[in-house]
Image (cartoon, rainbow over all chains, first blue to last red; front, side, top):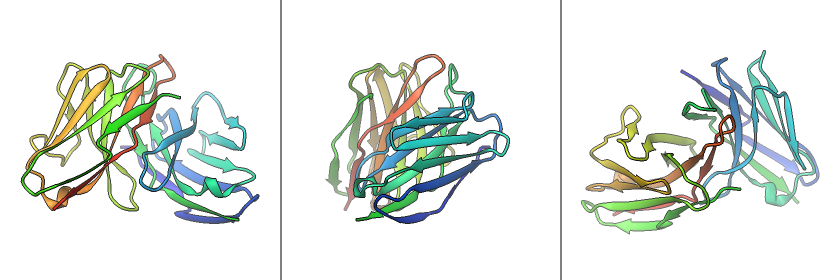
Length: 115
Length: 117
């Protein structure tokens, strides 16, 4: 089955710097890759997602890139702010779009943005 | 974005009692909802997939008689932890699948913290 590896497990950056979190997946059939932000004591919040028909997607300070050949995708946060501090999870899914695929999650990255 | 609610947000119960957690999709209908469990500082573990009008599909190792799931309408799924024990204490999170053809998206609820004494 699908396996998702996420690195790093913790990341500390200075406010204003960029943060990059990387994930790799094992099943080349996976076609949907969302990123979730989880603050302490709350549920995960979808912040951006990408589907296998595109290589990059951007939403203000957040961008995600996908390399299908290498089977990895990355989250990029620019101009980080203290409120970006949270745990970020990547996920991969099979068969979205008509079939109900389960999300396979990475182990999470705890991002700390220091003011 | 889509909104998913959970109730209660926190619950404390005595060992041996049953606890029901509700998951609602507030602004869309969800044929499929999911229930996850999350241990401290760990990732989300899928427990079961809840399908409206049919039986839930449980992941390997999850006791279906212990974690009862009912998806009676397109906006509500419930998880009942029966005869709860301290080891059932955890953060339970539901999600609802918003289906839009090729752009299905899973939205998560805020979670329920269960503490069994």
